[in-house]
Structure formats: structure tokens, C-alpha cells
Length: 318
Image 1: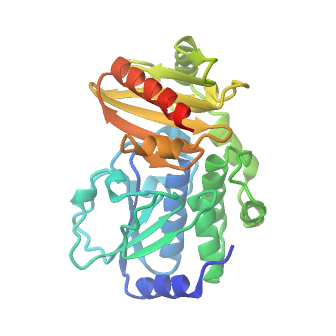
Image 2: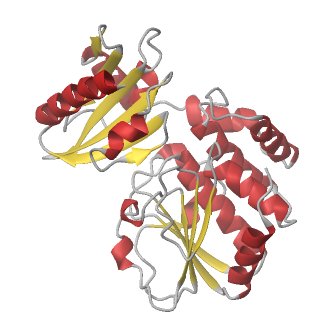
């Protein structure tokens, strides 16, 4: 994939006018969000631009291996006047936690994303239908003639690995593999990244997986499965959705997580042809055709009933 000259020129113009940059991403950030943010951080610093990665939420130990992970700040850096905000992996401004904290006057907003439902909320929008923001940044960096350092390569490799299910999902293309190869050539240690992401589970993770399997519900008629994680559950970081998606005959899997009283997060994954993004849009969520999410008010049991009943009705319209 090659980005247009217009896009590259616009991005270069923004950089010429940037001395201090703020990098933000969506709430509940995943490895694509964090890895991409740090890859951009390294590239901006290399080019003499002061940069901060601001993620108001705490990050688990599974992100610790990323180069410059310790440079991420949780408190908004009010002492710095930013010229540009780079929003990564966020389809809407509302998906960025505490977005309203950022002063808007005189600040350029660059929106870099790969979600098809992106609202193009930036002054410059670099939005492509591609596996991950990590892969998109790889093409942006190389099209600009920037080198890929070991640090950048490690961050991008982790980002791409996560959003492609270790390069197994349908969003993987030949370009994805070429980008991955370039990151390895730059010094990214693929086995170290794999161990850091996949073989670092804690006892809390194991307890969480056990709970999720105990609460597993399978609807054989409509070929979907779901599980739920109530408040007070073990505080693991394992992605429950990836555990239950291994069931062979189901088309869609859902994971309900009670974030707080009367607030529930729902992850949805499609394994075949069901567009879970279109379904999620009906509840104010969104994402990709094969991977989407919703956050909605209500107690856990009520939300489960509402979503599963609505999903069956949605299937009957297809």
C-alpha cells in the first residue's frame, strides 16, 4: 500500500509546524493502540519534535516490554503547550478518554486510524482499511522515507501481531507480511514479543479464564456464544474473547464485562460473515466487520439479555 502524495504532503506540513506533540488513543487501549502510539513517539523524537503519550488509564504489565513504555503519562501535561494532537486507533473523538481535557484552540488534530466507521474528526484524517494502525504507520513512515529503528520495529510488530491475531485473521495481506518482515529486519525480536504478549499469564489470568469458561453460554441454534465477567472477578488482563472464540461451530462470540455498577463493556467477534460492526452501531458502538465493541448502561444481566435478544433479531433480518 502507498499513501497518496496529498496525504504525505499534508502530514509533512503539520510536522513542520509542530514543536510539541501530544499522542492519544482510545479508552481501554490494546496493543495496537499503545504500540502504535509509542512507535510514533519514537519517530517524532528522532526528528526533534518533543512528544508525550497521554493515556489516562493504567496499563497492565503486558505492555512493559514496549520500548519507552515508561514515557507514557496518566496525568494530562498542562505545563506543555501542544501544537498538534495525534489521535491513533480511535474511530470517534468520544472514544478517547478525557478528550475534553485537551485544549482545542490553535491545535492541529491528526486522526490516524483503520476503523471503517471513523468519523474523520481531525483536520487531517489518515484513515485506511488496513489490518492495524501499526501497519498503517509502517506505510506512512516508509512512504516518508523514514527509517525503522529497532525500537519502532518492536512497537509496530507488537501492534500488528495483536490486531491480526498473530497474523491469523482475515485482515492479513501480503503487505502485512512485508511490513512484519521489515520490522524484524530492523531488529524486532519476534519471539520476545510473542513471549511478552502471549506467555506472561498470571495466576489471576488463569482464574479469570476459569471463571469465563464456567460462565460460558452457547446458543447452538443461532451459532453464537458468550461469557460474562462481573464486578469483583479476578483482575487478569487476558482477553476472554480470544478464549471462547476457539469454539469451532459458532459464528459470533461475545464477552460482557461489568466495568462498574450499571456500565458494561461488550466485545464482539465474528468468525465468518456476520457484520458485528453493523450490529454494534445500533447500540452506539462500532469497529470492524469482524471485531467490534459496545459500552452501554445497565446492570450485567439486563445488558446480556438485551444484547443477545437483539442479536437474534438482527440475525433474522440478514
